[in-house]
Image (cartoon, rainbow, N blue to C red; front, side):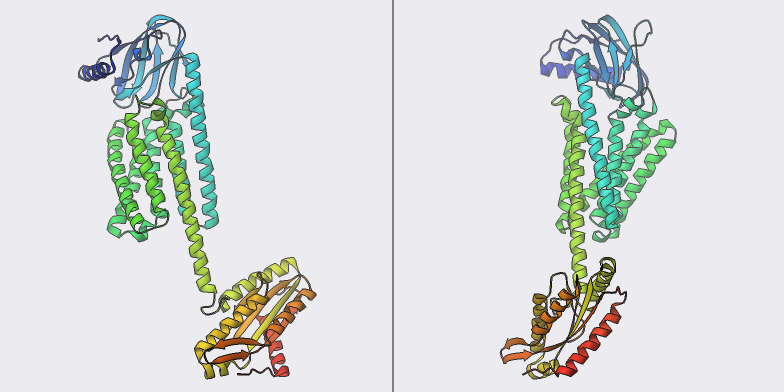
Length: 518
């Protein structure tokens, strides 16, 4: 059995001493005896202790002038017990880490560890106030992270429901999986279920790790639409990797524990391959100027650098070493939420453009027949609910065929645009103006009373008496006939209203014999 008492060495000598000591322990896998003394510097406690899979015992020699707390994270050990030389257990504190309250005095502490994989444990020896201060900071950090993750899950889930887009659910599933993983990884379940063995089981953590990989890859694939962007030989492997990683995570949770390490190693290799494929596809998406691709790439780089720095920050900055990855996941979640918002904005733009292309006239700045009838049906519904006067005006240009015959179709098109622009200037913004046929226009207005309906009709009738258009061939003057039909009773068929307004327009045309001087 080896004994070890740490002396005041220089930083370089101390590092070489640690390396040599670790090598000795790997060569001779015996119990460890280490010293802990609060009266000395913090370096008197070994910063790391190598442990082997299975039951492992570590003996610490302690000489304490006051009560202290010995603590370490249960990331490689599923369970830990601390006893003195008489076999009596030390008091275990309710904490996210495994924490033992050590009394003042000189004695040995034997740690009995149920180790899941051969790694290192990183013990700490703090005064009682320092320990609880550190625990409060940890609870605050993790509660804030978990609350923030939950808020994002709900927000994006509701957004996906309103947009009828299942891709947003993938984001919510990814953030929920990441939140639960870190909630377990950082020992928060030890506070909720003190003494429970399963909360520190490596297989549980691996299950949520598999969920993170699967949901994260699925979300990015949907967000950047890799199914359309990539060719099948590149796209199909990305989907398969995520599914296989999730399947392995489920298998290692239900199969015998001795297979867990084999599955975790294979899962790690596949995960790296999947991440590399996602990064490559995202770079290609940036090159192809896919919306939100730059934000996704930045979030991936943030996670990559945080995982790299985690390896080197243990001695440089303990706070960032412990919470750097959590902070990085928070930043990534924000960036991906912004990417989702960008995706929503682009979808709205595409939807608006599609609606405009399908609903607006190709020549005049007004609705086409299909778009006008769709909007008119909505106005009929609103009128039936709110009441008022529904006013439909049917407008037909007089002798428009002669304009085309005499001046050409270019002048005829310019005349139609002039009429449409004039109608928009006379009507209110909420009135529906459409080009219903070749030289026919319709206006539907929801007025509060008969007086406003009559004023609208008079304005349009006055405006339609003469339209003047200057062309290279001279001035073109044309008039239009207007038929009006106003109702207060709710109607459910726009066609019936159109039929009556068209009949009134025809009577007006016959009565006035509207002419144009061409």
